[in-house]
Length: 399
Image (cartoon, rainbow, N blue to C red):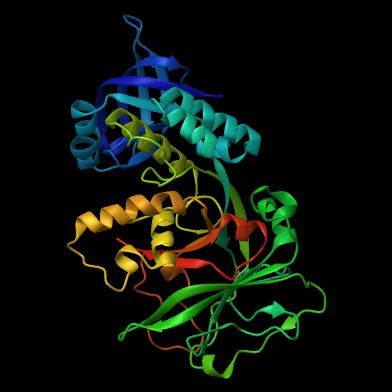
């Protein structure tokens, strides 16, 4: 596996040529042309750039790297260089995105584990290696030639006695459906479900005065796959219509828990562990696909631990309690401490950006257009194992 840890001594940007020249020392590993270098902008953001040239400097143990760097001057001087000079001079170099995407899954896991061993500090190494999960990213494709049972939008293809779920006295909007056998045929992720049949996803509707959006996600499961028919749109959904019908393609990815997770056991991470964790998480994010619907894996959370929020919502505690007092921090902290051990059994079933599903065929108003955060459909592990979708919870987070 191609990995290297380097120490950056200095750098010079040629903005007009979109080149960044770095003088570096190799601490460990080997650097190759077309590898990626992962430069830190700050303690939360990392960007990867291709290495165009590697040249040994004869007079010392240093190397000159030429990096493809199509950025403005402020990005280098005010962000990346500032972080190098004031915080951390090290950087990781690894395989190109193209090579990573064409590598088989077992090799991807071994590769990422080697990065964890190289960059991880303290308890981080064991924690990540013990909690790697697989996830499916579902990316919309053109609607032509929808030949399988898996799709977004339109109306459900289901048994003739199938009906749209109802929530708060109103039919729910059909989001899409997944043929588990088709999903399991070529990838590993959904084999965790150990089933055949079809999962159907629906969203309940809430009126936010100026616009409409999803409130909760409802899931139905059917073992039937023979004699399926198009289920007619309920009368009370005619003013909304249907979401745009789309085929989709599937990409399988490695997931690790977000840094602020309730799965971490013991004392909080120290600064060294925390900095190594965010860098390892950011490197993986650069290899993964962003802003797409995800099945299983871990939540890409925005406002803190989704597992914790799910348990608080499910048990109607904390800020989900009817008698919640916002300035009573001591009581809230006590509730959170008591809740953390109970939240570890929650699993992400599905995650999607709110604005992804906003085009309804008959609706002239705004639907989901201002929901710029993420919906998380959460399920307990036992219910997932038993294909019981009666007790799922929907959590929404935004910036």
